[in-house]
Length: 237
Image (cartoon, rainbow, N blue to C red; front, side, top):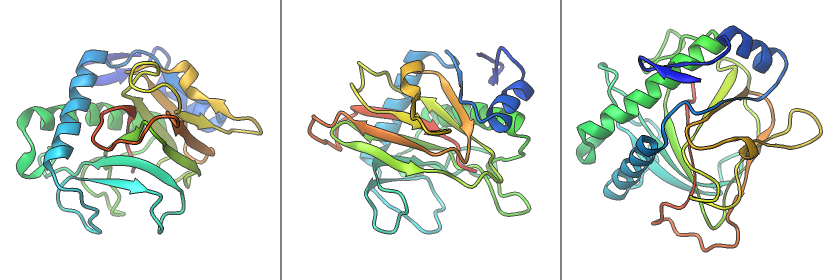
C-alpha cells in the first residue's frame, strides 16, 4: 500500500480486502505504508509525553492519558503493557494536557486520520473522533509491550460494530525487541504475524478471530523507563 494525500491506498481494493478479512477470515498485511524514521520520531515523542505526564486510568476521561497494565485484576485478559490513549476535541485535535505540543498533536492526527479512513473504507463503518448516534467513537491507542515480559493474553472481540482490527507496526524485530508479537488462531493452528511484518506495515484481521501477543524478550529485565519492546498503534471503535 501507499500513503496518498493522507490516505492509505492499498494495491487491491478495500472491497477485496473486506472479502478476504471479513468474508474469509484471512489476515491481510499492507506493506510499507509509513516510513520508518518518522514513525520512530512519533514513537519517541509519545514516550517523552508519557514521561512528563502522570500515569492515570480515569473512568470518564476528558483528556488523553496513559497507564501501565500489569495483569489488572478486573480485566478479562491478562496483559503487561504500557498504553497511551488519545482523546480529541471538536476540532479533531488530540487533547494532550499541559505537556503536549503542536508537533505531537499533528503527528497523532496524521496517523489516526489515515487509520480511521482505512477502517471505514474496509469495514463499511462511519467512525470518527466524536460520538455517533449510539455514543461510539474512535479512540486511538499507542501500545508498548515492554521487553522483559510484555504480552497480551488470548482474546477476541465482538465483531460488531468494528468488524475488523487494524494494527500499525511501530517497531522492528531484531532492533527494538528480539522475540514476541501478534499471533492469530483462525482455526486450529497459531499464525505468527510478526514473521511477515516490519515497521510501517498495517495488519488487518477479522475482529472476532482469537489472537494474542506472545511474550516479548522474556529473558530480559522489565524496565518501564526503557523504550525497548513491541510498539503498535490500534484504533478501537
